[in-house]
Image (cartoon, one colour):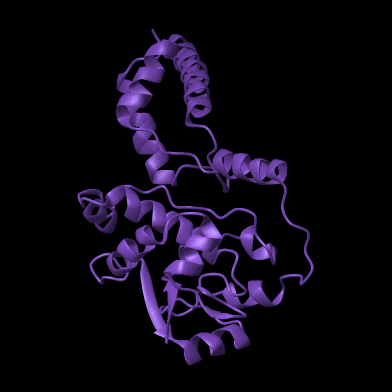
Length: 237
């Protein structure tokens, strides 16, 4: 009997936070909508049913003894099992699974039941790719009885991660910001070139706010401009 697995589970649906917990009440879902597999599904007649089934499968897979493998102590899960566990009709899973296991989509895969049992026994990754450095260490250091995360804690972590990951501005955005600050727009190209050459870091830390860097640029521009004017007057005849 074949067992359904979610491909690349560790890479796509696990984070440094989820690996801390034995049981999950939530699962991170990628929000990318421009992938080729997603686009292929989006033009199918049954796209709504297929995508709904996909989300439900990921949610069920996150609660399995080995996350990513649709198999529990009673054996491999089939379409009827997924329907009972999710409350959705089995028909959507019957439509979705052949599509999601198609190599052109590649979101699901199947393995032999013996191989699935071996993975459950040895706690190994279901991803066909080799483990990334550090994954094994993270699994071995995971506490066996870790309390489940709370909504507030998850929101706090997400806010911190968003704050630490600055999206680099475009030249137009910098020029608009300089216009608001009363800085010549010609300085925008200098600003971009300077920070691109530095890798958008402040000291040794990643820059957290390019808007604040624009304000600092204005301050330095005014300070150095005044110094140049003073020096010019000193050497003028």
